[in-house]
Image 1 (cartoon, rainbow, N blue to C red):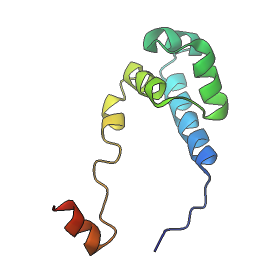
Image 2 (image 1 turned 90 degrees about the horizontal axis):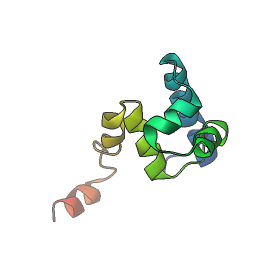
Image 3 (image 1 turned 180 degrees about the vertical axis):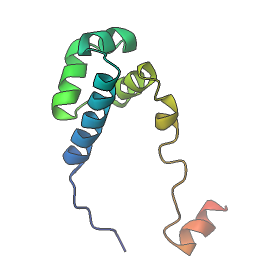
Image 4 (image 1 turned 30 degrees about the vertical axis):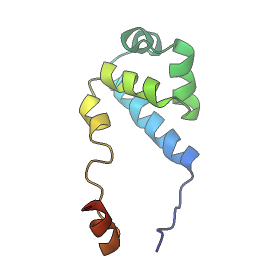
Length: 92
């Protein structure tokens, strides 16, 4: 049975952007400096923080610049099985 989603993809992305913005501000890094540190254009950094829209590559670069590489690496690493059939298929 599928879990019900109460958030849209856009809402999840906006929440992620807000967390990244908060980390950036907590570390006293401007959007311009983050752009220079990450190699992601200033416009992309600004758009991400405002809308949550960003490419995966740019998000990874920003995470690396903010020393959040392990958080990106650990995405989807410990996903629990949803059924015994999934366990069996994974064992093949």
